[in-house]
Figure: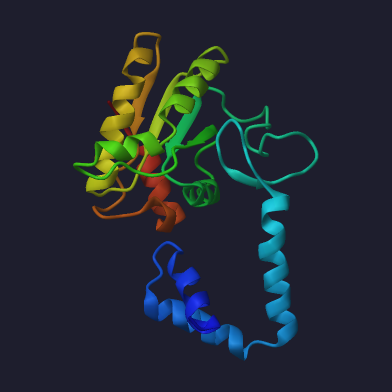
Length: 205
């Protein structure tokens, strides 16, 4: 296998990238100055040493030397009564950009496709329950489920609701983000105004 083909295969592993896009990436690199390509290679090589996974919310973050927690989880000014559960790390940025939500996050790690119970084993169900238990003792009152408005997102929502049902007896409210997001929407690509409307119009389970 040629270097071009092997590199294209690696790019194909990226989410949402098909064979044509992968080859475009390869040929783009060929047109770049060598110094730029070497810089990219160095950044890729360094990312595992400079970016860490927060042990509380499971977001990736750049280590600041102030501890293992990310800047959101370590911020005492955030609203301790709110916890938002999202599918992916990339969903947090647009929510933060909207300026609407001031609570904490938990990254579930994916979705549960319809008719695929096995996929639940890949998600962070156990850590989510542990975080909810911890935050209930710190004033947590509401957990907001913020998943894509599509069949997999709906199925994931039902799965997480089942995990959180026992905590409703302890005073936890489970609400759902979604109204304001059109069917088929992925949270990662939603604009700030859409997220604001979805947050304001969230409904309780």
